[in-house]
Image (cartoon, rainbow, N blue to C red; front, side, top):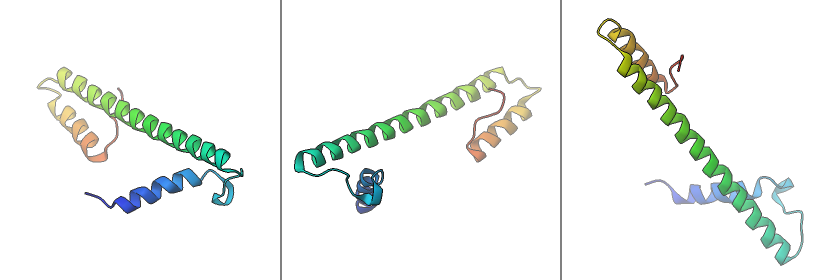
Length: 97
């Protein structure tokens, strides 16, 4: 659904970015291949870690919201609604959980 060229160029940039002037500091086919494979694997590990942390943060926020919903009574319904709207609109965790 999105532009594949932009995704490919971003991936190539993330491989070349850590090196000075976007050039590898090694010579020779084997060493260049090893360096690029190492760079690609570290890029993938970083992306996987970032995805897992975001998923964990979202799960924690949802669990906090669910706990708030379970503890809400008729007296504090409007307070719960206000917190829920603030979370939904601002996309940040509710304070106090």
